[in-house]
Image (cartoon, rainbow, N blue to C red; front, side, top):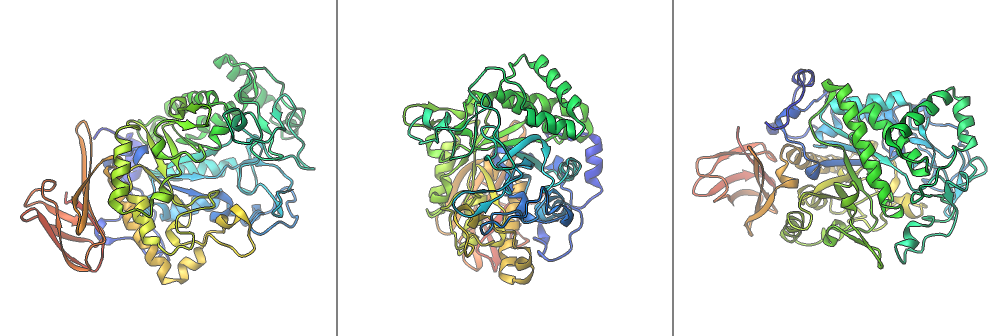
Length: 563
């Protein structure tokens, strides 16, 4: 095996159980035993990752004592205030095995740094920074989300189960200006013009929307720390420590004390201190791209430093990972994003992957057309890089299947399309994406439907389907990173193969199959006499005359060779 865990980590894994494929997914309302995956048996690749994306405030409330902070008690528009979700709630679900049962091997949650204290009217009713994208202090966590100790506990709990943590980071803007939250100094931010998105300049050197101060990420001019931030640090008893750390950072790097470098230092501290595995970078095309290369350089340095200090906690030798949100980037664009007057290859600036805005449209196409397209592009134009596919998200008002009428097809498309997959919280439970009275993005951000999941059999059946596909995907990097080949058009059967040196992973999948007896062509892929396990039904069959016969009540088959 190419990727070997340290002995202590292996010791932790061996004390816990894995769910055998034949058992299938555990019912959603059944108590979960702590489940640690034997990570040394599965090759983890970011380009094949199964990522779970959630709004920290809307997922699970693990600590009701932190629900009201900074007197955030003004009335808000529907779904535009804090609702109680927090880091402790995420940890609870990690420890219960929820993510493991879903085959998730990376979790991305919205930013948890301290948000502006006040609220602002965006024309849709008063709104607080519940979503995490309105930073006030990058060096502190917002108490509505939890404490630094709770974040450390979350990361450790995830790592013990072979799950990576992606931290959502914002570098290009602060939070809006409110009565409680004055603007950062004028040498730190621009307050105008508002972006018109007609060119590179009118997309990067401007405020994304009105009253969202834009950091001068293109500037190399040194600036002083804001007086308000210094006073805050002093009041919290950490002024001397923060200043000493900044001095050490600038001496080590030789960077000028320009705005972006302060923020880069503050963001990479979480990597250095906690072992965060990667960043999801917000609004990547709205900042000077050289800032992302510098962010990656320092994050990679911090990750390597953490690994050297904590060898017993290292999962594998994967480097630090960075995925960018370049809004409206699609896989068909290859390596570059076109601003109209200029193209930028963000993969040259620290990004291993970009979020792909194209799959939500492709999802209506026949399976083979989708899979063949993504296989071709990922193994040609984007060879060595990847994309993160999604079907619904927190700020995309045109998701695939907004009424949740096709949850099984959504799972098949998202979890079986080449590339990394991004499950948006509630995709797997048919969480509503429409809320009466809500406006715009708020519709997409309802609280996780735990109670509905426990009470509705239909939702539990949908979840079981997502779990089976997710676990199969997690065990087989060939699904996301391998070469795709159709074996049969009717019934539809395809194979995936991933090879790296001595490591080889190969699987066969059948979709839209007949219910009951069926014969699947595997000739030229699995030889006669090979015993295959259909992990979807938990049954076994032997290949004869290039085919495998199954008799199951399902229209899906997930075939792997029996060990």
